[in-house]
Each structure stands twice: as C-alpha cells, then as structure tokens.
Image (cartoon, rainbow, N blue to C red; front, side):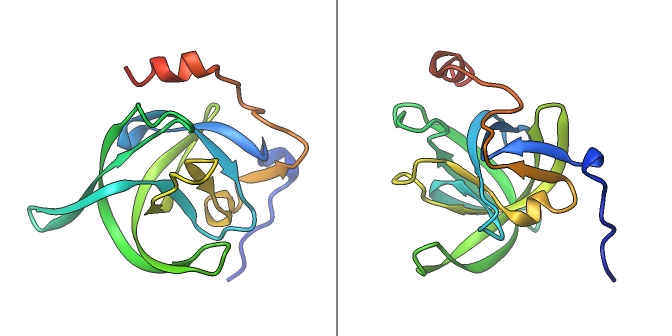
Length: 160
C-alpha cells in the first residue's frame, strides 16, 4: 500500500536544524539536526540502565541536552520499544535501544521512534531522521530555526 502524497501546503517546513522539544521525556528544548540521510532519529544518551516495571521494560538514561554544556545533565525514562542494530555515517554498527516519544516542533506534535546512543562527540544532541519526517515535513536546506531561535542563556534556564 502506498502512502498518499500530501500537497506542500499540508507539510511543515523546517530548516536543516531546529529547536524541538520531547515533552514525554521532559526535555523542553534540544537542538536537532534535520537529517534526511538518516533513516532513524537518534538521541544522545549515556549511563543507560534498564529496569522492569510491572512486566514492561524501561530504560533510564542521562543526557547533556545542550551542546558544549556537559555541566547540564538531565535524567530521562522511557519504555523500550525494541533494540536494533544501527550503522552510523562512518559505517560502525552498534545495537541501540529504541524508544517512542512525542516530538514538538513549533506548534506541531506527533509520535516518533528514536534510538539512544552517546553523541557527546557530535555537534548535535539529536538527529531527526526520515522516518520521523515522513508525510509531515519538507526541509528547506537554506533555512535554520524556522520555528524559533533560543539563546544559550534561555536554553540553560529551561534545565535549572
């Protein structure tokens, strides 16, 4: 079955990078690279710890939500939906936990799947992949922060 093709007026236009939020895991602001080359979205995570709650497996992890700010640490908890082998842009394969959460860009919100991986050495703490964009987003590669800019001070204030 093929998916319907939506008119451009029905799609959300985003730039190659955007400030987003992940309200289900209590991340009010995180800068994401909109990556049409990545199939799956990826979120920075370290010190992952799994636990069972009434027969449902969860993962607790830490995140540095703001780039170049390792002094800000946020704990997140999410239900594990799956584990998958993922190849990064360098061809390295690793097994990652997959979680499902809502993503918010501007006034728009919808559920996405994302993998958890340590992105401390990467410029962006999150990649928004093609699957999350499918039938919702069109990317303007010349644009940045089309749904709002945030200063470093403003972002840090969200995590105090």
